[in-house]
Image: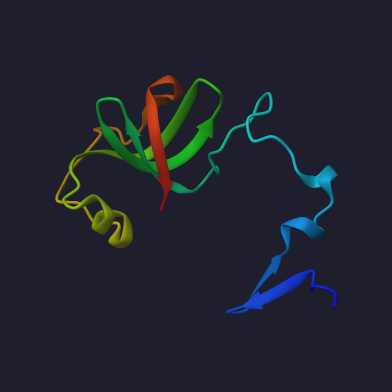
Length: 110
C-alpha cells in the first residue's frame, strides 16, 4: 500500500518530507539569508535587552524597527508570547530602533 503524499489537518495541507524533491531543500544559512519579514512585528532578545517593533528594513548586520519599544518586564515569558502582552514597556522616543544582528540571541514573530 502506498503512502499519501499530502495530509489535511484542520484545513492545512501538509506534504510528506520524503515526497518533496531534494532540489527544493535549501540550506538555512546561505549567503545573504535574512530571516525577518518586512512589515511584521517581532520580539527580539539581545544579550542585554528585549525590543519589540515592526521590521522596516533588515540586512546581515542590522534590523531596523519602527513603533519600537524596550520591554523592561515581560512577566512570565511564555504567557507574554501567547498574549503578546508585557508588564512594562518603554517606547523609544522617535519609535525607530536599530538592532545589531550580532547581539541577537533569539526572536519571535508576533
